[in-house]
Amino acid sequence: MQIFLDTANIEQIRQAKALGIISGVTTNPTLLAREGSADYETVTKKICEIVDGPVSVEVLSETADEIVKEARFKAAWAPNVNIKVPITPEGLKATKVLAAEGIRVNMTLCFSPNQALLAAIAGASYVSIFIGRLDDIGQDGIQVLEDTLAVLGNYPGLEAQVIAASIRHPMHVTYAAMAGADIATVPYSVLMQMIQHPMTDIGIRRFLADWKSVAKDNR
Image 1 (cartoon, rainbow, N blue to C red):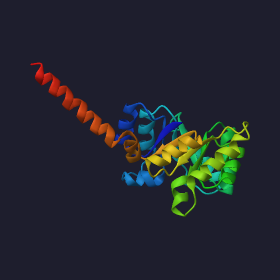
Image 2 (cartoon, one colour):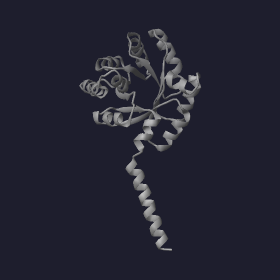
Image 3 (tube, rainbow, N blue to C red):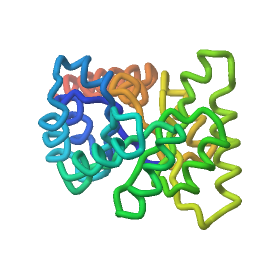
Image 4 (cartoon, rainbow, N blue to C red):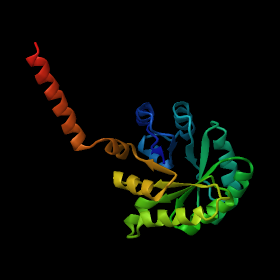
């Protein structure tokens, strides 16, 4: 499974990239707003300088024609820009056009296998299942992810990769990996939690203490 970073924070992206474990980045207007910036183009170009893999950029238009127009504009920002399009009738129309032009679409805000199936048929390169938001409304987000993977797995001709999105904690990533998700896009805080474990910290302290004890005795 690939790990994408779900953020628009440049420093977080640099730090995660240095770890050698992220393959891409997903952004959206909410994440951009958190960083206090309205200059989506400048931020995106900075991210694309840091990350070689896919960088998802969201469109804000609502009609198919406007989505296509905006997507073409944003896709030109960098060769690795992908376009996030919400799963709506207009979004599907636009995705069909964009896919035919070679613009890779990340169909976002998917909450059911049916939505993901339609997105894949329309030509989306990625479908994002928002497991955390499903959990929020009392549905089993991981089960929806598993069902989506089962449905799309029946049709090898559909090339869409499944992204586990709206990740809230490390176990979401574990369950997504167990389900066979192609990608999990995670907040920086969750990525750090995935690395850390209290027993690792205890082990490091014990090894260092033992080594210092041995070194002291051998003086």
